[in-house]
Length: 425
Image (cartoon, rainbow, N blue to C red; front, side):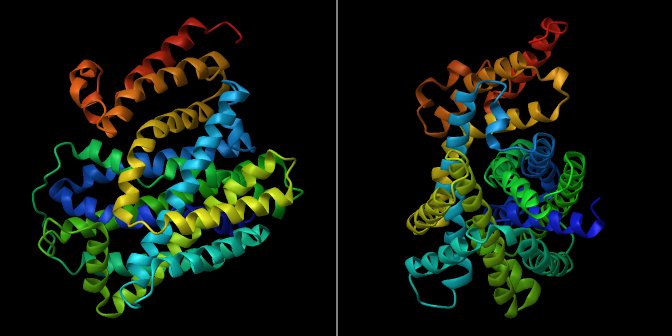
């Protein structure tokens, strides 16, 4: 039913909803620190920041419901609590972070105005878009995303040819794992389950007569296209950072290296282009988060328009308040919550993607409980609560890489499927 144009517009909308503050500022510094291991780091980063989010959208294409549906096979209560935490984290951290990045990189270098003023104007515009949600697909897909991609290609393309094609050594002990964990900071797995719901509702509003299969095909094709674009952009930004190892000192911050690359590639006008890029990339993500959170709240009250509006307003006000903190502080504060909620999100995404016969209710419950239990040491370690007894959990495979949940979850998934293979549960 859908033409290539609709698929492309939807893919561009997905890209812009994913590509926000973390997606822009994390890869260059990661590449700068990775040196000659930049490709290994890119693969790790792509796994957590591209592959898992794309699978999240594929899960949405299969379910065509809301975030609540991701955990329903465990229990409705669990699913509701999980959804609440996801939206609470999204609206409290990555959404305000977009305003903070915009102020530090796009406003502060040119105008002597307060972050209060920047975030107030910023979230007033976010609120305006959120209250006109039926137009989101067209605005994001046809106007904002092409502008983002063009500027990114200019910065990456010129940067790659501006530096000698050689790399320094890396200070990263485990490049692949470091890439995976840095990918957590993009919030894209969480973004997938949040903005995927926004896309579903937007498609339902726009294509009211489309069948389940037609919408499933549209979302899946758009997800693969958006994922490929994201991976290529990340690879370009990481490579740009790796090639610039002689241009910056080791104390360089995330925002400084991105600004430096823009100026190196496009000269003095580079900072202007970067400002536009930052503003657009951050803005589209904030729109997706505020809209998704408002959708969730409204769904708990019979799709009440009043609840949607109130939630969108509250989310925007919270964005103004938290957006006053600097980017580095918001990233640091986010780590503990990510170390706990991210593994659960990844597992729910994967279980919703695999064929139903391998993801029965008992499998969902066993694997998710295992993941929660084995994520606790990583969570405690991220808040330094585990330091005195760190060796207590050293027996867990991959624990030293903060991935101690991976193998236990995999073993339980396989074992549960074998044990309950012929039992309908």
